[in-house]
Length: 386
Image 1 (tube, rainbow, N blue to C red):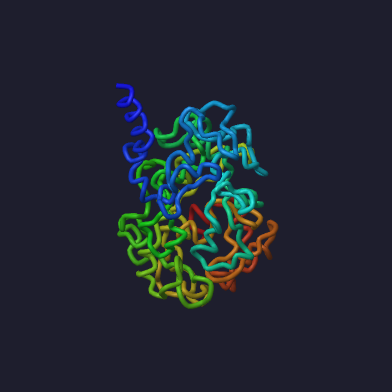
Image 2 (tube, one colour):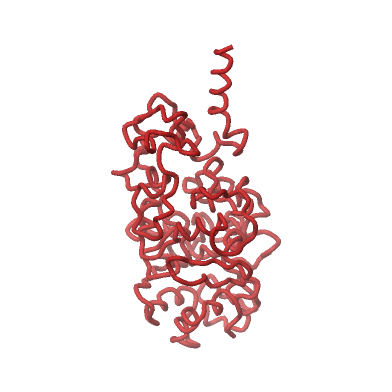
C-alpha cells in the first residue's frame, strides 16, 4: 500500500502540467533538448518539473536555497514575486523568472548561450549592440513594463478590467502574458507563429498566435496590415525571409488583440510608478489602427513599404513597441523601427522624429511628432489627427 501511495505522489508531480496546463513537453520549458535545467539538480532530466518545483523543499540545490527552507504555495525553489518591488531596478530575487532569464554569468539555467533578445533583435533584425540579451536587463531598461503594475492589474488589486479569473492574488506578473507551462520557443523560429510564447490574459490556458485566425493576416485586418522592413529595406518582419506582405503578415501573431486585452478603451490601468492611470487606447478609431486616416495623407509623405494610394494600413503594437523594456526614453519604443535605428533619449521633437520619420517623411509638419505623442497619446492610439 505504501508503494502505491508513493507512486501516486510521483505521478502527480510528473504529470500535473499535462493534466492542468496543456502540452508541457512541447513547451520551451519542458522540451527535453533545450528546456529548464537548473544547476545543482542534475539528478533530473532537462525539462523536468523539479527544476522549478521542489516537492517538500527537498532538493536543496546549489543555488538558490529553497525559500526559507520551506516550500512556497507553488513549491517553487524561490520567492515567486516580491510585491514590495514597485519599480526597477529589480534584483534577481524579486521574481523567480529572473533566476534563469538573467545575464549569462548569473543565470542558474545550465544551457550554454541562453539568451532572450529584444523584439527588435529577434523579429526586426536589429544588432545585438542595440538590444539587451536577457529578460532581466530588458526590465532594467529606461523604459519597461512595470511588474508591480501588471501584478496589481491582473490580480484585480488595482484598476478595473475584464475578469482575469485565472490569476489568484499571489500570481507572478510574467504569467499575465505568458503561460510558463505551454509557452513555446518563438525566438528560435521567428517565422513560425505556431511556436508563439504568448497567451492572452483573458485566455491564459491557451497560446495566442498559433491559430491562423490569431494573426495579422486574419479577416479582421484583411490586406490592411503591412509588416515593416526587417533590418534593411527589402524584406519584411518577422523573419526577413520574404518581401511579400501577405506571407509575412501570416507569420505575425495578432498583437493588437493581444495587447488590447489590457490596453483598450475600457480598462482603467492604475500605475504606481507613473502616479496616474495609463492612457486608454481606442485602436478601432486610431490613426495607426483601424481608422481610415492613412488615406488623407499624400502618398509622397509616407516611406516604403507604406506608400500605397488610398490604403488604410493597420499597425501591430510591436511594430513600434517592445514588450519587456527598451533603451529608449519612454513608452517602450523599439530601438529599430521599419529597418532604421531610433534614438529617443528625451521628450523632444528631434528625438521623437527619429521614430516617426521611419515611416513618415514629415514634409507636412516636422514639429508634429511630439505634439501628437506627448499632448495626449489619443492622437497616436485613439482618434485620428487629420
